[in-house]
Image (cartoon, rainbow, N blue to C red; front, side):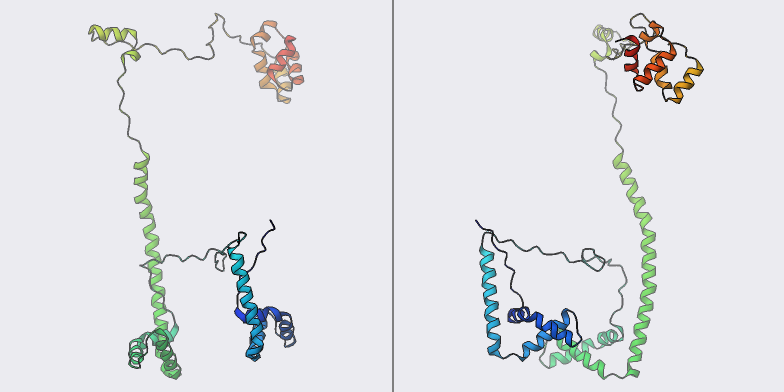
Amino acid sequence: MADTQVVKRAAGGAFGQFLNANRKSLSEKACQEGLKGVAAVSKAASQAWKELSDADKVPYEAKFKEAQAAYEAYKKSDGFVAPVKKEKKNKKGKDAKKQKKDPEAPKKPVGGAYGIFSAEKRAEFTKAVEAKGEKGFGPVAKMTSEAWKAVSAEEKKPYEERFAKAQEEYKVALAAFKEKKTAEEPKKEEQATPSKAKAGKKAPKAPKEASPKKRGRKAAVAAADGDDTPQKSAAPAAKRGRKPAGANGKEEAAGSVLPEELLLAAEKENLRTALENLAKRPDIVEKNCDGAKMLDALKQAGGLVNKAKSLLLGC
């Protein structure tokens, strides 16, 4: 089965088809006029599109309908792959997610002197717009804009002064707000710390009463006979593993006494510890090996004690 060809969604209507078909010539025309960039090409295309008659626009309208039909057919096919929406990012390259505003934070004044004028006249202009039978924000904004344009520079000064005062008050309020939040942070940490400490501590376990089996055979017999005399607990069984010194009736060999000169020579070779270890091995002590030979064997064995031991014993 042949792979389905990806079809892009048609956009821009008939004008979009006109722009795509004539992009090269429009770009050259914009360059001749000393204009560059996408905006210049779009502006030239818009102007050229307006100059076209309705009859000349018909072919581009037909092309747009064909492109729409092709995309719909592709959308219904088995090979359709839905386009992945790109996440919006701000100027710093971070995800453009709205940060939650602190309800206690002071409100920043915006809109300049016009914003003060608009807030002052909003109720008046809203009533005037409703009296004309109009509704919504648009008519009020239009009336406000026209009224502001009619205000002289001298009449605008009080609004400019009020806005400047609002800005200064905001700066003072913001500084106090930040200072308050900074002072509250250590308190929050102190309040959180005890709860964490309590959560981390575990209640001490109550000591379990030893069962008769753990008390030992004598303690169990005494408990059965009703003897209240305290009995010593049985000695714990010796752990399995290496036998303690003297377990076979022999004490561990103390090892051969090595000359200081030989130890210094071994230290230069980084073999002093290995030499002292080798000299303490019972088999080496029993054979009464020479210290110099032990050092040579360690050099041949690359510092491995067991391998040097095998070389000395001829294993």
